Length: 325
Image 1 (cartoon, rainbow, N blue to C red):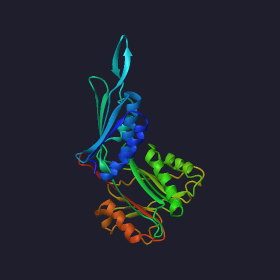
Image 2: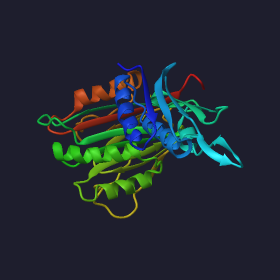
Image 3: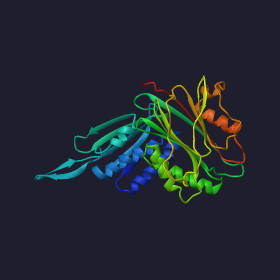
Image 4: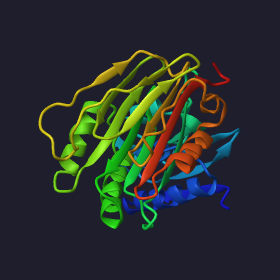
């Protein structure tokens, strides 16, 4: 297994090499930090724009993902002499907003060093942590799944997406990959615009049902279209999440946006596609919903309540505080 990744950045093609190698590296170290690809590519893009040439290094340090970027600075003619100027430190608001720790240093001879730390489970600077666990399985006669279950942190909020493409098998899986590719590349944090983007991307496809949410420490805003089932559960109650009928890709007009003021610090969010049996209704006396790891909760629901004749997917989200809080 590669313990450290280094990619030299000199031409635009190096951006694609960086993305490919970083995805492989994250799989090898078993880290799910979706924003890492965007941060690394933003740093590399700035090297090309403002720093001429440089490198990106990625590794693990103290439980976090460390991304280090360095450029040599561009040569600018000033007066009768030359001076190293510029550097990748220009225009890094997206990187700053997405990182848990951000350091920048101007090198004495010109150029810039940038060091970024990203934490697993999306820990942010305020200490709020949204732990997310997912599990999926395809129709028992298929090898590929038409459900997609994604999440990432953008700034101090979390974006969740669970989509169930109509049908199953290879054709449904191809549409699911379109949704996944869009979600991983976009920096959009407004769920209304994510919905509108999906409407356009899926217009010529079979479409999907989807749950799209933006979660902060105290509020969850969401759009829930089609046959996605979701609940908020704590020690005292179980509340079914609202939704509307329809198919994304085939609808007109603005989506209905719902809001929950219940903090995920106190409750667990459960989102299921219709491949989970209707007999599954979470209740407060299901203690394992609160005590098991979020990934284990998702696996347990899929293993015990899934319908074999359909794709099945579960997302579990639970809030907390990081040790730094």
